[in-house]
Image: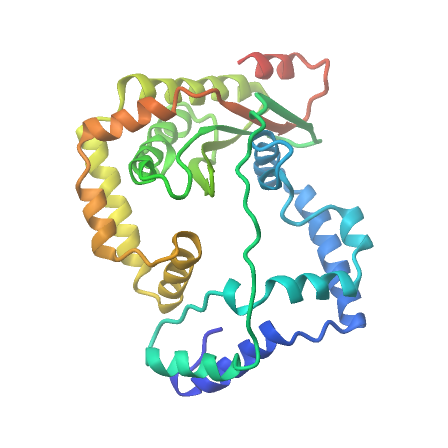
Length: 331
């Protein structure tokens, strides 16, 4: 919620009512069910999004991390008001809640306001988290009648608590984190094989991955996949240059500083940090970690993580007898 500073008490009233006492009206529940079912259908029509879900399922088979966040049509259709109310009653308890606020406010006043609104509530047990144990699948393929083939390639990477994650942020940026990244230059600028190509990291409790996405024409798919695989191997074997490290570090610092210009972004940063790490990392801590790396230390992290077996997910217009598909599966 974003509101005037003078309306802080009204904001706490509204948010508390939403979180602690939702109405779960049957007619509104059915309306929202239909919205979610439509959202599932819409998501299935977006292959550039769908390929990331396909990748997650292959990276974390037989584990909740590999499941669709939206759910499945059958489970959403079968869900009842009582099911949702019971889930809410179990998990939406004070011990599981993080409150984040930023802007023109007084911390003690916010705490006092929350305490008054939670006077008759207590308890809460965080869901048990179990790290994936089933090895990732090497390939995942989904046939769709699309103009492009959508590719996602991933290797294991540091989890959300691993100190290597800071160095891997620099590796990610050099690999595909912007217009000056290696893959953007080699795939888009030099060869014109794709419009969209980028890298991203996933960090969970006990699991992580470094992934690359690219959307390209069927005629160029095998070449694009080969270029992505080759860049993973090149960085693992030869590492980054000092110039690349400094450029990536400057970009990360700049993006972090620009993000602090907005109070909503500040609220999200401190809230996410508290949820994920149990504390808010200060900007000085983050700055010190980024500045403390040598290129040899970053390359050591890359050499330890990037050679791991990679998973490839692809969504596109092919079938099991397609020569293109056979090429992708062996690339």
